[in-house]
Amino acid sequence: MEFYATLGGTCQSPQVLNRLFGAGMTGVRLNLSHTTLSACTPLLEEVFWPAARAAGIPAHLIVDLQGPELRVGTLSAPVALEEGGTAVLGTEGIPIPSAALAAARPGNHIALDDSALLLEVEEANRTHLVCRVLQGGLLRSRKSLAILGVDVDTPPLTPADLDNLDRAAALGVTHILQPFVRGREDVLALRRALEARGLGQVQIMAKIENRRGLRHLDEILAAADQICIARGDLGNAIPLWELPGIQKDIARRCRAAGVPFCLVTQLLWSMETRPVPTRAEVCDIYNGVLDGASSLMLTGETAAGQYPVQAMDYLVKTARQAVDDQRRRL
Image (cartoon, rainbow, N blue to C red; front, side, top):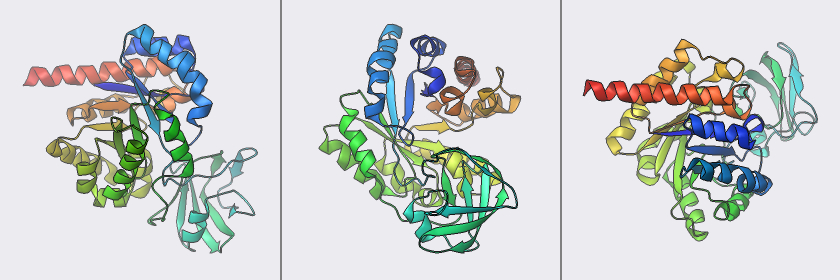
């Protein structure tokens, strides 16, 4: 199995990366919604790849593109949204993409930061949205935005994505996480962009995180190299109680098609602030492995968490226990 960490502030030192590799990590993810490959060049060339060579591991470098994902813009400071209060999105308030402004209508619900915050649109025009805060909290820059139940028309690759792909070969990128894949054409657009840059060998990991992706899963399976069950935004797009059954169904269809799949989001979320996971989290990992996951990926646990090495250790040990137990039963 492959075990991936997300690079971030708490795991960028040689010492922490060496310990992560020692715990069983086999690769890292770079979230390019928050940075660029150009900005990460020193980190990759001077820290990550030397640590991988020292560990003797043919490590994977996965870049997670921006794609059609919607995000809040850059804020000068975090914004406190109070339940029952008003929030203005757009040119007169919190910056959001123009595509979101065009798609939103009064009555729509807008989820921010993986549904940590929830708004209801009360007024909508071409420049801004006036919203009532249903579920408040602190909003930070570049957090995810979803208009629940609405498909927003955006291109599969942004100019920033293409700029990042231009640097992918020089920095040793092995896999591309393609967000919000809506169908076969999105995957083919990325495939053409990779081949044009001499990157035909790079693996495309299609992220399933919206209803369109679910509806077109069979054609995505035929076009992609791997599937990523991205439970964060997928859990925004559907009622959360439906997520376990949908995860199981995607896993079953991946197995039937012979396509590997990665499981990601909140695998060990509590370990962002605690040195020991919950029983529910280790059971989740164990069951994901029994369902056939070929890789597991940590996000905030390593990018921003207080216990990145311990989180990787629990991830690897739990997954390996599941594999060993499964083999004994056969």
